Image 1 (cartoon, rainbow, N blue to C red):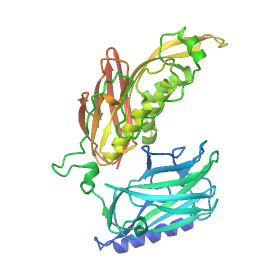
Image 2: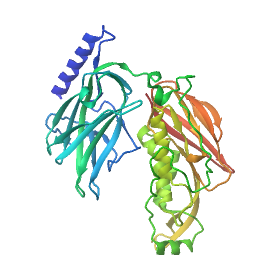
Image 3: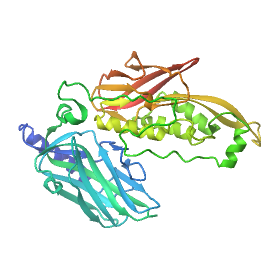
Image 4: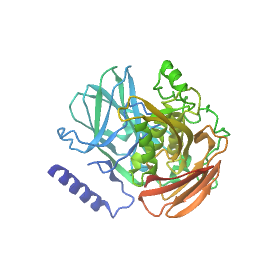
Length: 426
């Protein structure tokens, strides 16, 4: 802790000393002491598990918690890669070095690279010795960055990880030594803005039929596989004889779904996953195949669009589904009773947005339903509510940075739901 305090004092002193020279480059810390939750972009992620942003596995030499932890195991040998996003990004760097502290529980080949607005840098590789800290100091020229560069994401990876080997990668103290200023949204024109008319990133609406179970891949290189089905063919046949529902979940899963939709408080990170988790609970408990569009495909596509727009254009995810759930029919629970239920829910594929003004788009491509009539939807921010139509765009303006609430009101026939989504404004 004392070392951490001295490090913070030294950094503050250095920044203070440079304050009078606006055009001089200065050090910018992306992550240290768990100062930023960050986010790993789902598009292209091949790490087996999502990051833990404030892990505490005790003091690991000069790596003091909290730090980032990336773990997992796969049944095949391969590369694990992902793009990290932090609140300080995008960042305008001009030479200098990239510092990062890494540690692996296994001998591993570690790689790091930078994603810019229009291209990616080269990668730097280091051989990590198991359970040993490596403080890397990487000249940007080594990455092929010889001039100014707008960094949008930092890519990290472990390469040729053996099969059936559980591996953990710890990361801490990520810092650029020479940043002149934060890259403005305007300077990232190829990602978030159009130079010709200075309008927001052009979202292209699809001609998808929301009730169709099929979707074409849009930004992802291939279609995602379906969630693994819970029921065997024999179990399906038995259950289909008892219910006409397409999906049958447990009573516990049903309560979890209801509670998540009615929650009045939630972290932005948990809110981001609510739509995905609820659809996972329902669709994996399917009794029939090819009933609705694959929610996993839609969620990852929506996340890719948000990332491509630098989190200024956010697709609204919607589900409008009938399902059933089973509950004990008596005190001994030796038999089950099946009840009908309905899932009407919304979600967004990110825990944060970039800036106080954000475009929310409603595209039938991102609606999971069997209904021909789509729900009517209105969206409220700071008490101001406006409706959004299918294939429509709604400009949201948040009052300040930090955790903000988006209220989504949905109605279809006699069903209506009011749901709170939570997002961090950066």
